[in-house]
Amino acid sequence: MAMLVMGGCTPNPDQYKPIDPETAGFWDLYFVYPLQQLLDYTQDMLGNYGLAILVATVLIRLLVLPLTLKQMKSSRAMQKLQPEMQKLREKYKNNQQKMQEETMKLFQKHNVNPMAGCLPTLIQFPILIAFYQAIMRDQSIADSSFLWLQLGEADPFYILPVVAALTTYLQSVVMGMSDNPQTRVFMFMMPIMIFVLAFSFPSALALYWVYSNLFTMVQYYFLGDKYKAKREGATR
Image (cartoon, rainbow, N blue to C red; front, side):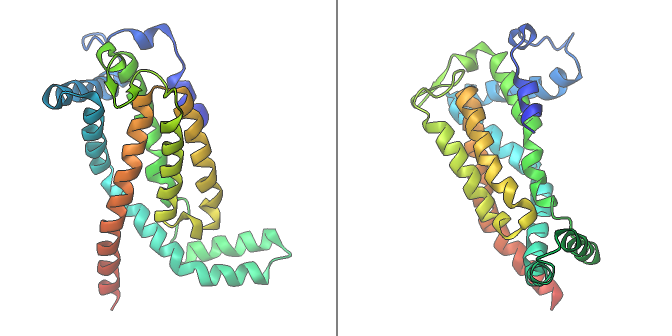
């Protein structure tokens, strides 16, 4: 995942050239350019690129809502399986291979994919790459400021990287990743990786990630309760 982001955000001369829709390739034309146009259009209405990034974040999160619902379903299923998984861990505590085999059988029996909860997070990495390139290829975004931030540069006070890492961790807690041994490592690795990326890359990128985390937590809080009630009502 780190290689994906770093590869997409490694500086090269083409990344700083404005996008020409007539000659742009598939990635630039259908991912980077529309995002750039959305940010510019929203900035014209709101007068600030920091707020424009917020609007773009909300639209993107609504776009991936089906994946979020799938993630919530997976989290609920994993929570229901915790008692049985705990029994397997106790029964095969001296035989890790057998425990893993029996755990996978349990997942297959109940049609549960333990990694489905990570999908909405993983899908954001191509979006991060598109955001980075949109920022670096639109000088008006890179030169603008929001609060204490210069959006085209890293936060000199390291406040935003810390907030990005913290909200990434809190999002994992809210979504119940700590209850799933298969995603627990992911839960702790992600904040570290996000801190490193936010420490190195433009503040606009970290700002998008913070907005996205906050939106997801609010969305999960409200949608999660309704989704849970709907599921429980259907099983009665």
